Length: 249
Image 1 (tube, rainbow, N blue to C red):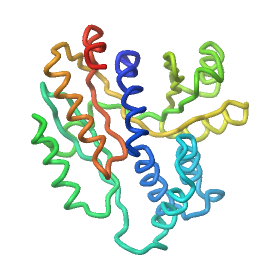
Image 2 (cartoon, one colour):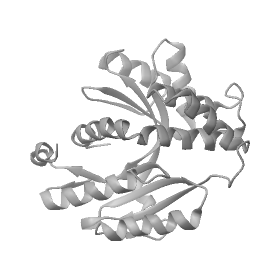
Image 3 (cartoon, one colour):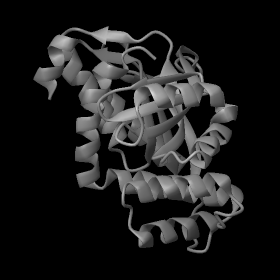
Image 4 (cartoon, rainbow, N blue to C red):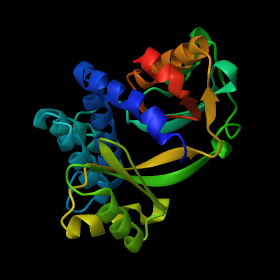
């Protein structure tokens, strides 16, 4: 989990831009549709859907978007069913990427992802050749304004969490994948406001990028993959060197 503070500043800047561009709404809609397809359209009976809706509301996703995404997932709107798939690849200097996609056209998505890598000094990898470099975890996000670092660290660890990482904007509670829902529910029951809960892939050995040109290329590839219309999540193993962060802002 090293490198959170270095990369988090860049991610927070990106998050604000993404919100303006509407990418966040699109990703939330995809997750809601997938959850509804897997477990039905009633959030009271579908924990994954309930979480997806909560995450969407946390970023002010319009109600219409949420309702439409549920109907799309349950098949009420017709059309091809959305499917989940993870692509693996390498960027400049061998930086590893995992891209989680939700799409109704696997052939189109595969071609588009391959094109994005090719245009950004990267290449698609064979399944399994990148994923082993990451650990699957549950991640729960809470605002630093709602609870102090010492308090959330103690409470989260007692609840069974593996670790807590904090910066100036957010506390991130990491769990085993099978414990995510239970620990998030425990935190809510204790009165903590959970902004999101999701599964993430954490690089085992982060790679620090020290060259500005490479850093720009890697970030451009990340942005292109993250900005693709069917992308849910992009995970990578690079860190930006401290001396480059200000230049990249």
